[in-house]
Image (cartoon, rainbow, N blue to C red):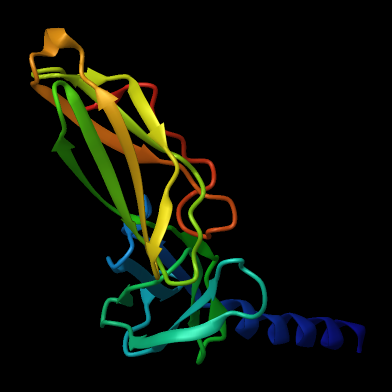
Length: 219
């Protein structure tokens, strides 16, 4: 009797381990995207070495500040080789994962970063003075507080150090601008190159909090 019970328990455990499905997802845009640009994701569903084709997949997300339950954002079906893909636009940073309801398989979560979309312009003033403006587009309910860093160098420079900084000012719903007025060195003879960088604004939920502006901007 004891031997029969032992064999029964072993046979009962085998189907559970053999039917375990593995689902994985990866961000093709893992460095982040600018506001208005979609994130792209790819994944696969397998059972051991065998791909699972024709299976339902849910893309689930949890937006910044990453509280509450994950919600289904989109659905798709795996290809014959078990792979699947999603392309979706988000307003702010988002935690993402994939779920296969038939297999009750759940992937690990990955964080998708969405940065403000920048656009820079400049206007020549009197003499060697210059006004540089960076415009930033965000989701409507975002506040930007971190200063923009402007980099300037002479014509032909391959890099430049920080030249000025300016705090962004809200000019509309989801619209900001940071403006700096600078005086160009006389040796540049009015010819210059410029760039800009902005850091993460605390509480904005847009971009990676640990991202920093470079000590030198590479053109």
